[in-house]
Length: 568
Length: 49
Figure 1: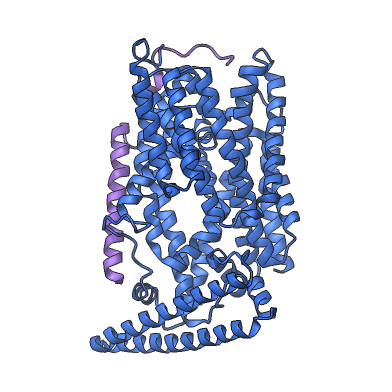
Figure 2: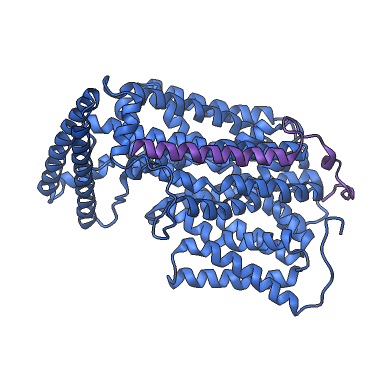
C-alpha cells in the first residue's frame, strides 16, 4: 500500500464523514435527530438500507465465497423481495400511521409496555454484540494482510463512525451512506473491469464463464429440494423470506432507515429499490469472485491465502512438510493450466471429443487441488489450533493487493472500510434511539424536554459506540465471525419476529399472552443452543413458531377483549 | 411522544403511486423481475455446465 493509496482511502472516508457532520451541524430537534427530516427522499433511503445491510464482510468474504464454492450463495437472497413486499404492504402503513420512532414503540401501542421492553431489550442485546463484530471483522483481516496495528484500525474506524453518528443522528447516517454506497459501487465496478482486463489475452468473458462452469463454480440455481445442501432455491426462498422479514421488518437499524423521510411513498420506494437491486448486486459481487477464481487458473495462487499465517507455518519446525505441500500444489497447478490451455485450443478447433476429455481432466485436477488445500488447512490446524483456516476471507484482498494498481488499492480498501462504517453507523444510531425512546423516555424521564432528550440520545449513541469498540477488542476469541453473527441472529431474531407476526396478523392476541410466549420461546432457543440439540439455522423456525402457537394457546385461556386496530 | 394523536385515516392511503399508479402493480413488478432473474440464472447455469 503506497502513499497514493492512503491518500485515496483517507481522503474518501474522512470527506464523507466530514460531509455528514457539516450537513447536520445546526442544532437539530428531536424529530430530526431520531428520524431524519423531510429532505430525505426514497433514493437516499434505498441506498441507506442497502449500506446498512452490506457490511465489510460482504465485500471481503463474498468474492472469496464464490472463489471457494461458486455462485450458489446468491440464492440466500431469494426470499428478500417477497419479505419486502409484505413489509411494504403490512408493516409500513402501521408504523407510519402510529408515527413511531422505533419498531418496539409499536409493540407498546399494540400490546403493552412489558412486551415493548422485551422486544427492545432483545434487540439491544443482539445488535449491541453484532456492532462489535461489524467493526472487528474487517479490522482483523485488513490489519493482518496490510500489516496495520489491529488496535489502531479498530480505534480509528470506530471513532470516525461514532463522531458523525453522535453529531448528526439519523440524517447524518443516511446522508453519509448515500456517498459510501457511491464509493462502494464505483470500487466494485472498477475492480470488475480490471479483473476482466487481467485475464489472459486469449480468454474472453465467455471463456471465463465456461472455465468456471467446468469447475462447478457457475451453478447459480439448484432446484433440488435437499436439506443437506446449504444453498438451494427452496431454502433461499423460505429461509431468506423469514430472515429478511425479521431483519427489515423488526430490526431497528433497518426500520429507522426507511422511517426517515416524510411519507410512506418514500419508505416503500426505498425498500422496493432494494427488493429489485439486491439480488443482481450480490450476483455481481459473487461473479467478481468467480472471475478472480478464473484469473487464478492462469496465475499461480498461494496454497493458503492468509499470507502471514502461511509464512509463520513455513518458519515453524514443520516448515519442510509445508514446503512439500506447496510443491505438490504447484505441480497440480501447472498440469491444470496446461490442460486449460489445451481445452482452449480444442474449443477453437471445435473438437468436441477432445473438449469433453479435457473438461474431465480439468475438473479432476481442480478436485485434487481442493483436496490438497484441505489437507493444508488440517496441517495448519494441527500446528496451531487457533489458526483461522477459513482463508476464503483473504482471497479478494490478496488479489487486490497483488495485482491491482496503486490508487485502486486505496479505493478498494476504502470500499471495505466504508461498508464497515455504514453498517456500524446504522447500528449505533438504532441502539442509541431505542435506548432513548423505549427506555429513557418511557421509563426514566417521560417529561424530559426534547432538547435534553437529544443530548441524552447523543450520550447513549456514544456509549453504545464505546461498548462496540470494547467488544471488538475482545472479539478475537470468536473463531468464525460470519457464523458468530448468524448464530447471534438465529438466537434472538425468531422470537422478535414471532412477536411482530402476532402483532400484525393475530389481532385478537393481547400483550400478556405474547409476552410469556416470547419469554418461554427465548428460553427454549437458548436451551437448544447451549445443549446443541439442533443446528442453529433451525432456531429461526422453532423460535418463531413457538411464540405464535404459545401466544394463541395462552390467549385462549385469557379474557377476550376484541381485536386490536390502529384506531384503538 | 410529543406529537398529536394520529388521524383515523392516513391521507397517504389515497396517494397516487408514481411510476406504477398502484402499489399492487409495484409489487407485481418486483415479483416479475425476480422470476425473470431466476429464468436467466437457470439458463446461465445450464449454459455453463
